[in-house]
Length: 505
Ligand code: HEM
Image (cartoon, rainbow, N blue to C red):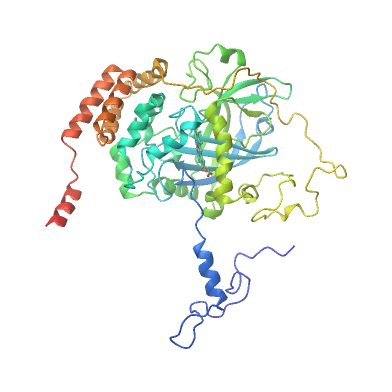
């Protein structure tokens, strides 16, 4: 095997290692003649530059990340056999990436948008990814609606502008999203920075044990710095003043050894409790109220290292809800089931089929020589090891690595249209009352909705008022008043007005 490429060579080379004596001028025919195709250095440099960009993530394109460790602080061996949770004091290295959802790679950090919060635990039994948001619920509960939801929040296909009408059109036509909207349009939708936000698995997963027992669970990561938010005006100010606010805040904090940390909790329900629970545990638009299912402390996660290279370690990191480890299994939540497919599929497109071999994605231990070849195989391709399961070199199977024989499902194949009912407005209504107990929060919610909703067409506005009335009659009425007032008298930005006037003159 050739020696690894040195990071700081003593002299300038082309990509094949050939020294280049004058890399600031191209080879030409005479003093003023055309450039020569034989100039490998020039062609090599330009051809590589032309291919520098890889597809950005289809969602969550803007983000930043760091590295650190997770430490178990409480015994949870009664509910899971996960190796990395098996002992108090056990530490696991982690990588994390925070993100916004709808904007492009260069978009501003303080947009009103859920925040992504994805953690990769490099455990002894494989990589465990917890791919979460900072909201405990989501807009929809069937993955088949995801592309449409996202398109309605991305740019209009004709104008290439963000579009208030399509946003609210989708929301008011899919009113199971009311709970997420209550989260997103309160000041919770603009957290102060990555360091001050919480994260939630949102979906139900399963904890399993090697003795065959299991339970349903949700995970929560609560910021030790405590959850802090921005008002809409503060967020808009930062949007212009420093679009990379969160990215800079995280990097600077870690650089100054001001390490952010989160405490990890779980909520658990036995299968019997889940059966009799008021809320459908496979519905990601619902929370499990803490008063009914208390939080149980598990451990602490600390970020203490910045990446050395953004592209290698953060852009190329690949999280997937399907990256689970023994002791943690997916539930039948239909959104989660769709996600189990979508992430690795996106990563095969974004990073190539061998994305798991990239240093930041590489598990501590892996033996899968049946996954061979393909573009950019960088792991030595398993040398002479058989590429099939050979009786001559048998590979051991670890017992009880997967425990999937828990649930028995019976039913006909069908499409289950899961329309919004009155039940879907109970938890949003509860949240509206919670906001009422925090000074100014209901007013902020009203303002945050009205500034955006006033940009939508009349039909969509009306349907949206109806949705808010189902949350709370008074809320619907006040949103309608505040929004229609803004439609009649749109707020004017003096600087923009001045520029328009200058252009007309
Ligand atoms: C069926 C619904 C969903 C689908 C199909 C979906 C699909 C995707 C895809 C394709 C990516 C890009 C992956 C990549 O290229 O690396 C992504 C990123 C992400 N998604 Fe989802 N998503 C869904 C719902 C959710 C939900 C409910 C959450 C949170 C609870 C979530 C959190 C995230 C996060 C945090 C990222 C960014 C991960 C990173 O930092 O690399 N998604 N999603």
